[in-house]
Amino acid sequence: MRTPRSMLKAAALATLVLTAGACTETPPTNGGDNCAPSSRNDEIRLGLAPACEGCHLTGNKPFFASLTAFENGLAYDERYVKRGDPDNSPLIQLLEGTAPGSYPQMPPGQPYDELVASGRVKLTIEQVKAWIRELPPPPERLESPDPEAFSVRRLSAEEMVVSLMEQLGLTLEDFVSTSDPNWRNKEYVVNGGKLFVWPGDWAPGISRQYVSDSRSVERFDALGGGNSLVYRKRDVSFGPSAAQTLVQMSQAWCARAVDKKGNTAVLRYVTLADTSSKNPDAVQKNLRTLYLRMLGQPPSEAEAKELYERVYVPLEAQSTRIAWIGVCASLIRHPLWITY
Ligand code: HEC
Image 1 (cartoon, rainbow, N blue to C red):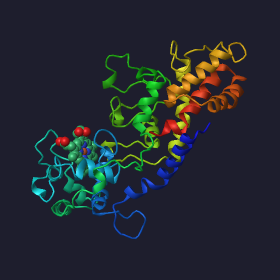
Image 2: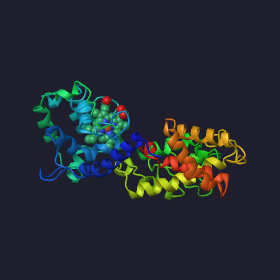
Image 3: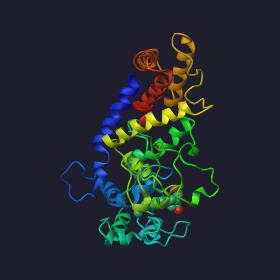
Image 4: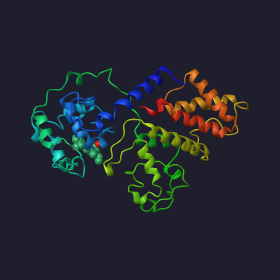
């Protein structure tokens, strides 16, 4: 089931697992290991990261996703850093909690100095100021896009939860009982232990008090999700616990999608009464459509054949329901699904 493209992505993902995370885990303290910052700018990026990357690894301000992102988006953006002039640089005002915009302080709600005092962050505001004072001119590569730049990353846990719900035609109501008009304000009812996975800092369930099934949040943590309420940063690698959680989640959610009445997300061109002997064309068509829906590109002939012969047919011997759940879940574990 591997095209060269998916092999490439899988290989890239493997590298990601090995290298990402490790270097942002701890602020740089020595120059001897392979996590040593690659430049002065990188030193500052890694120094700020523990305080910032929880919210700025992805999204519309992914300053801490890479050195390039840091330089392009923050260090050499005049709106935030005025080269040579720390006192007029909004970045410093944000750290000091005196910025004029709608967000006076970064991180929101906690003075940066306190993070330094508590030892969570080592880089002081003075050091950031000194860096701005001596900030070297932008590296040349900022001017032209780098075709070699690493452009594959794993989906974040948030993206996994949101895109999977959408792709499988599921809504919150499939997991929690939202029909009670007061459901947001009280401990909500899980609709029968359906392997709900949900961020600990999103509504519904923004504080533990509302989450009647704490495993929902624990699973999200295991997927590598961060939690800004407790300053836990996202795990950008894709380790065994994330993989294991995704396996369970893919099985359970695909089953929900197949069993949900009137849901055509998985069963678009077939019903559970169609089998490969009775209606082979419909089965083939549905298989290809599902592949396209989940992975965003049509399968090659070889991939479609492999999915059919190695996943669908053996499982169909048990039931068409199990066969479609199996096909659906195997697509979610595909390297193309996990990466972005
Ligand atoms: C708890 C989440 C969180 C943390 C931690 C955090 N930020 Fe932010 N940051 C936000 C949000 C939310 C916004 C505003 C929404 C947006 O523009 O994406 C923002 C916006 C910004 C902006 C743009 C401000 C503007 O007015 O345009 C900068 C610069 C920034 N953050 C830098 C940082 C830095 C540096 C750190 C670490 C010292 C940090 N942030 C830590 C959530 C966070």
